[in-house]
Image 1 (tube, rainbow, N blue to C red):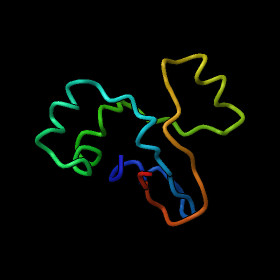
Image 2 (image 1 turned 60 degrees about the vertical axis):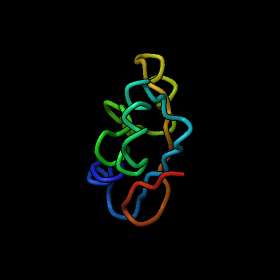
Image 3 (image 1 turned 45 degrees about the vertical axis):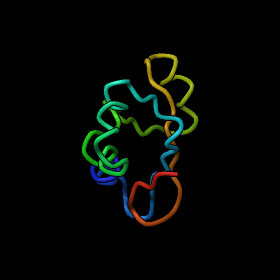
Image 4 (image 1 turned 90 degrees about the vertical axis):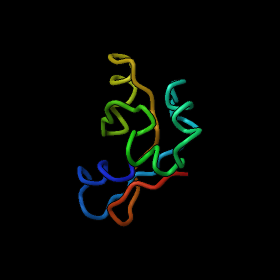
Length: 84
């Protein structure tokens, strides 16, 4: 998440990812006992398979049509993904 996701963002936007909103599968909890948390987000994306970036007005429709959930938001700033 922290390494690849910023590549899709235009200059001037950053992604703020709320760690507690990510549904962590048991296998990643097990791996996390042996790997640093930051590395879990960098290398394994904590099991998040795909991230969609949608307009705020479209969030409800996208959630209704998928098994997805919200993990964060975009805001003005340096092009990066930050974990909070």
